[in-house]
Length: 339
Image (tube, rainbow, N blue to C red; front, side, top):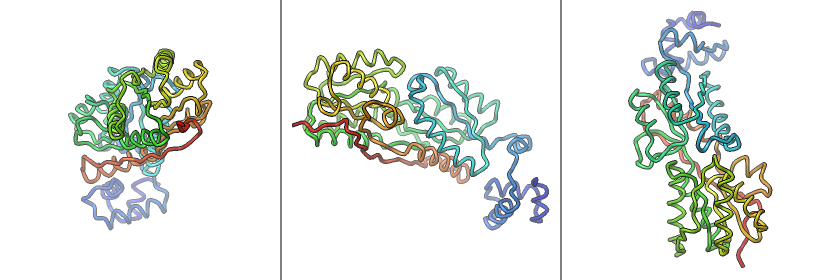
């Protein structure tokens, strides 16, 4: 059934039916609900391409997936595809398309957003890999784009976001180790230009201070995900030169793999000689050997919530709806109690 036939059955104009399905406030709620019921009854699904031609705008949601930096390795993209899966579920229910572009550098990423906005006329965007000071926020604000970010900036700019409670999760991990009598805890982070990495480090330092444990700079390192061999060397050197270390917190599951490799190289048994804990994902959940204890959080739910907020913003023009997911520790035997 096309929109003309649906409008005839409802005894309404095509414009009213179109705006009712689009959730516009100038159509009464009673009419919107009636139109939706008929659309469902007669299995009407709006043609997104016809809509673009008619209005010059698209209901498509834009998403740029970086394949550089934290996402350069395909092994580290599992969480992103869980997030996309959550988005897709909600978009499918609303008959909205998802347009994904890929970027191999920061320059390509900016051009990709400009392509979505200026060429493809997309007005709804989901961001990820938020930096402490993110120029993409300024770009989307410049073009008055409706957007939701997976992550926050350091400066609490007024925009909508979904995220893991990074500070709470890191405090939970650190407390978990301290309660098992660990005092010599190392922390393997990635570049603090990514806001989640900055949040996790600050929470780690704060929790150590809370328990009167002095931070040892020799126990801290920032590694690059795109250089796994170098990460392995950095972690191996740290453990070898600081033999008091009893536990390693890895800010990403990818660096946890390098930590496993380093411990194996030094003939340290994980879960008895030394402990490793990280943030959950498909690598440490399904592929690593041994399995690694981790702070788990619902990535797919974050994707669903991102679209829920995006669509709600589109209707009521709010710019600061947020959702923060809590984590839980999943024990897999890689953390021991210090005697």
